[in-house]
Image (cartoon, rainbow, N blue to C red):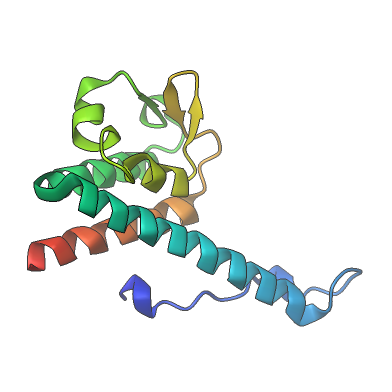
Length: 142
């Protein structure tokens, strides 16, 4: 399903009994946080597409490869670290506004001259990968 049509479901834990906010507040807070994160991701993708121009497809394909590798090899550190000095990465993604923001949306953080994914979240990686694939398909359709 297209990401635009996806509804974010509250986590099952949101309805667990116990102290804290009322039952529905947890679900609403989680939904709101997920929507905000998804909107930041979409904004980063729009910014990347605008900045990369004719190179947008290459940037999106590179991001898709990075995310796929992280999903397929979650325990392999080499797929979770991108050196900012890597010429291929900088040419394809890093030089364009929005490129590193897409990776940040997937959980990557700046660390000593590299982008590092310390604690991979498969759901977040998958969501980001789907958004990148959707953007790539939309670009190809134009």
